[in-house]
Length: 320
Image (tube, one colour):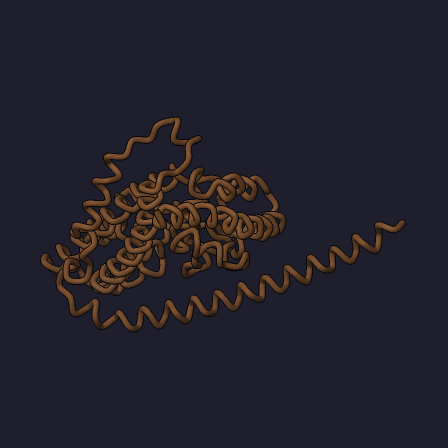
């Protein structure tokens, strides 16, 4: 008899917490949209002024990235690495890797904008149909100047329903065929973004292989793959540990495309955590939404627990 009021009170408290979290998420989404729109407006004229992607993107040809990838190639992952302490040199490499992932993401966004501005002459509607930068570049590279894309296999890149929309829209587009030099400019930029993504994946694989050492608590909760994604997009473990759960749960959130299709999952307000085993096993969307919020909260508590021990180790090392 005494448990009934307690259960009712707890349920109402949970509802209030859910509402508060969703209000925070709505504010966050509005802010992200405003920033995104301002950023694109600012870049629009500049990108159209450039005739080559090499004028706006330099990271792929930089000594910094080449040297870092070379260092990763020289690193061998032994089974004993999973149980020993992380060395100072390895920790530095992980931190630098996370920082470089952020730089690559920034570069990818710039190249993505470059491609959109130049390919809009041919297929202006495509940017609203495919929002993910790498997928957009791969599709553009395959489409080229083709007006009839029904014979081009895009299903390995984008979902079947999106393929259908792209094919229909491409056949009725208001754009024009690109000149040979214009198409070469776009093709070069597509190669640039694909190479950047490959470099990013190489670095992510290394970071993921060290997550059990860098963030053991967070990795236990959400897995090494998701942990590395969250740390990468947040700009490091220290920055991730400072974020509230309402922000953590939407990191990597897919945006909506025209027509209501999502670039990723259609679950409301979800990011990388949607791929977490604890979340994706739930079939009911409402339960999954709640699971995302709970996992984000637990992950937010785990990240600071990981950070200080590694950070202290670094400080002790430098002190000597």
